[in-house]
Image 1 (cartoon, rainbow, N blue to C red):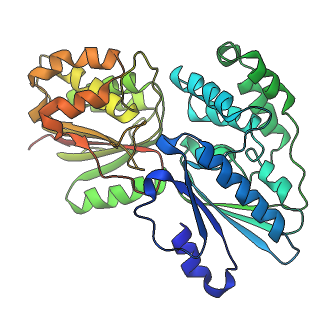
Image 2 (image 1 turned 90 degrees about the horizontal axis):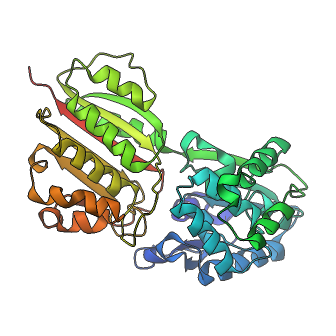
Length: 393
């Protein structure tokens, strides 16, 4: 994003600061902007905090009536743009880890992040007293809920947003998991930030954009292609089982199975079909293993298909994170096909799933050939799932 912005702005750009993931240090192009790195394994760290402080100083030093601050915001921004409010970084990290390991979705996580931050939830606007703010945003959230993307650093908090955030962060389901110090800080943070003018927040890419491009691609290959949903949510293991039911249903029964994904099909299916999904599921950690929602989803799907007595039609199933990183691993996800459902290692698959150790399973399964490892892509528009089916005929 930064490279494209610098190219388009040319001499109209004065200067800039980029805060990028630490795993992108070796591949970032030369930029006029100063570049800082942080958020190892997509978690805020001391480098993130230091870079954020430098960015805030930069804003204050350059704020003027004739200045436009251009913010480039994308997935991962919550970890990169981090300035804890009233808590140490360790305390904030512990709270977020607790919520994540207990199945909190991104909306819940970002509501808490906003409460515990100096910059999130529109609070960055407090540092711009004179200039104008324009934000170009890549959405990594189901429904493109702009106030939660990267925890909404440039999104003014309306009364309804604050009410929603308060409802989320005072729910007994979550508050019972967190320390009294954290909850006291959450309750104290309830006022909207002050601002001198309205920012311009524009979504320039999202999961829907990605699915549309995928549909064009598979159509060009001769598939009857359909976008089923860009709002896929729920527990990754359960969703994996839904995909197994869908794959095994057969052409005559597939419409009923698609309704489980919140879509009543208004289309007929050809003989070679590409069904496309997007969204972001959650996981509940049960052990000390490594993995991510896409790897867990694909493993769950494989186990369910392996247990079925009737063979599935020729298929391919893929689940992957568009940023190339599924959980704190170097894999984006995994894929399976008919050739995989009789492998002996699947008998042990449930034990890997029970230990939240899907990464290790896919590393061992067929020597890792089903693991998807493209490396960091630099763009996060959530996850995508692809089901290819060949009904013959």
